[in-house]
Length: 295
View 1 (cartoon, helix red, strand yellow):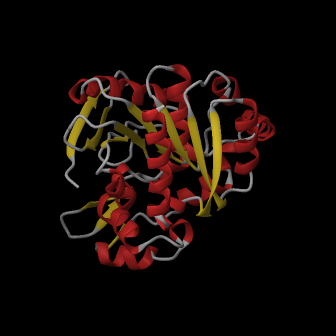
View 2: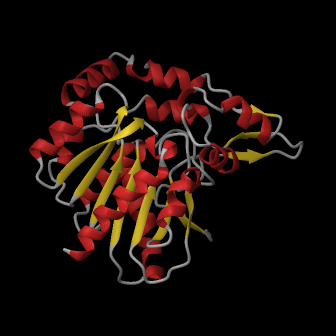
């Protein structure tokens, strides 16, 4: 898969970067990654999609090669910057259908993009988007008022994350089968090791996404999420894992039952099911997008 770099000096003062396949006139999949990852972490899945679609991989603040720029700008502002970056790059692809694709944090960012910009995408496939149920959002807001939410389990775990290894082979061995990487195909973990880590002159490698920024994202949440999602009218398919976060199926059910534009389907696997079985995930993405194109 051939990928070309792009960059965008954003209105927030930081430069966003990513990559895309050479424009060919095919429909475009606009992809946003999960927290702590980057677009090319998902290469096994993206390679299966690249034959039928052009790909645009958008790495958000502090991920991949995008600028860190201090503190996290927030979920809604991140979505605005992704829209800004895409609109600046879109002319090179021409007047082709564009579909949103996002995982986890990137799934919610994609949903926020669509809710505010209904004509941006023809449709969307959200992979295990971290949708918090309304009751949980209320607890988050209360905890945030008293300064506790930023200390949640995921944020604390991110702060303690190991960030450096002697080389990539050591990093692969240390991460294989552990934590969020459990069940990943080897080629998916290698994609993470090759693209989510940066080189140092001494030969060692380090996470591109600073664990402090990853923790800041986990310690924040998209305010007025459900009020925003209520306005989403873009046809959207949610794929979510059978062993995902306990709160997510409830939120997916609520959204799909209250919004006719949203449908959902369970996938075998965990929160990163697309890294465990990229072929099955790609099959559902293909089916959804081709149905929208023929409809």
